[in-house]
Length: 411
Image 1: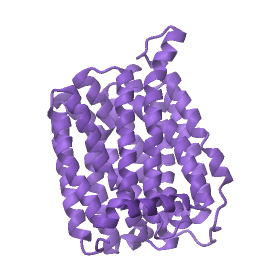
Image 2 (image 1 turned 90 degrees about the vertical axis):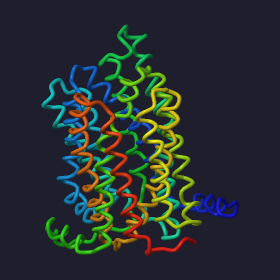
Image 3 (image 1 turned 60 degrees about the horizontal axis):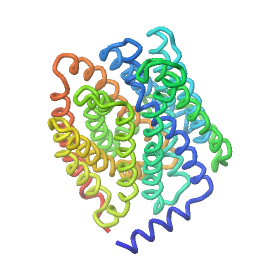
C-alpha cells in the first residue's frame, strides 16, 4: 500500500501542463459552483416560490442538457475540446447570473436552460479532455484528481457560502436568510465561476478538429447504442441518475426541514461533506489497483446504502450528519473510476459523443427526479424518497457487477 500511494503521488506530479491547467480551471469553477449549489435552493424558496416550482426549475436545467447533450457532444468532437469548455463556462456563468437576477419566473426557466447547456458542454468535453491529454495508465489518477480537487475546493466554498449571507445581512441591514442576502452571495459565486476562463485560455489544444460532415444525431445515437458495452453503461447511469435526482438536490432542504439548522452550520456540514468526497475519490485509484475498477465501484456503492437509510430515518442530528458524510464519501468514490472506465470503451474520435451520451442519460434522471421529488415532499415528505433512491442505487450496483465483472481482473 505505501508503494501504491507513492506511485499515485508520482503520477499526479507527472501530469502534463495542459492537465494541470485543466485542474486549475476545475478548482476555480468548483469554488463558485459549490456556493451556488449550497444556496440556490434556499434562494428560490426565499424569493417566494414553492417546492414544486423549484423542482420544475431543476428539471429544466436537466431537460436542456438532455435535449442538447448529444448535439453538443458532436459539436465538441468537431470544434475541439478547449473551445467547447470555454463555451461551457460562458453559458454556465450567464445562466447562473440570469437565474439570480431574473425578475419573473418565466425568465428563470429560460436561464435554467442556458445553465443546462453549459452543464452539457462540460459533461461532453471534460472527460474527453482528460482522455486526450493523459496516457491510459494515468487516466484513473487524473479522473480521481479532478473529482477530488472539485470536492476539496468545494469544502472552502461551502464554508464561505454559509457565512457570506450573514456578512451581507450585517452590512446591508437585511435578513441573513432573505432573498437579497442570498442573491448577493450567488452573484459572487457567478463571478468566481467566470474567472475559470483564465486557465482555459492558456491551454494549448493538442489536436485540431478534423473537418468533416456533421453526422445526424439519431444516427450517432444508434451507432453507439448498437454496442453492448455502451448500452450497459447507459443503463447503469440511467438508474443511478433516477435515484440521485429524487433526493440529492434537496439534501440541504431536508436538513433545514427535519432539524432546523442555520445556514452557517449548513455551510460547515456541506464543507466537510465535500472534503470527505474529495478524500474518498483521491483514494479510489489505490483501491482499484487492489480490487479492480468494477469491484471498487460496486463495493463502495453498496457500502453507502446503510448510511443513506440512517440519514433518512434517524431523529438525531449528529447521527444524521455522520451518515450524510459517510454516504457521500462511499457513494462518490467510484465516480471517477466509472468515467475512466467509460472513456476506455470509446475510440478517440467518439469520446465527446460517448461523454455526451452518458451526460444526456444522467440528465434524464435529473430531469425527472427533481420535479417528482418536489411534489412528493409537499404531500408525503422525504421518507419515500430515501427508500426509492436506496432501491435504485442497489439495483444499479448489482447490474454494474453483472454487466462488467468479467471485463477486468484485480491487479
